[in-house]
Image 1 (cartoon, rainbow, N blue to C red):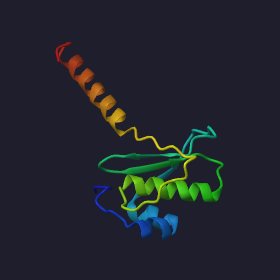
Image 2: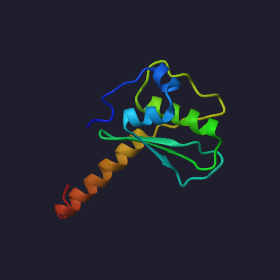
Image 3: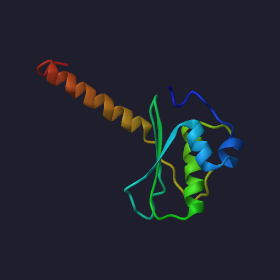
Length: 116
């Protein structure tokens, strides 16, 4: 199943019970091992899945708000309200895709005996 086939409404992302949202959109909600106070979580999106990873030991409010924001961002929900200015969102998709291409190119070079 393609995890991004469904595009929920902003009202649904903001108002549905979080567990229902996660279950219906087939999101994997994970606890991150990153505990830095400035880290609020990340979403990793592939064709097949959406993983939202949040740091441990945060308030229920922060956990809920960040999970909803990251899920909404992953599904490119129209009308998603911006986070407060104190938060900075970094989209690393291009960097990750470039790293994957470089790894694939390197593996292909090795298989071909150093020839690209």
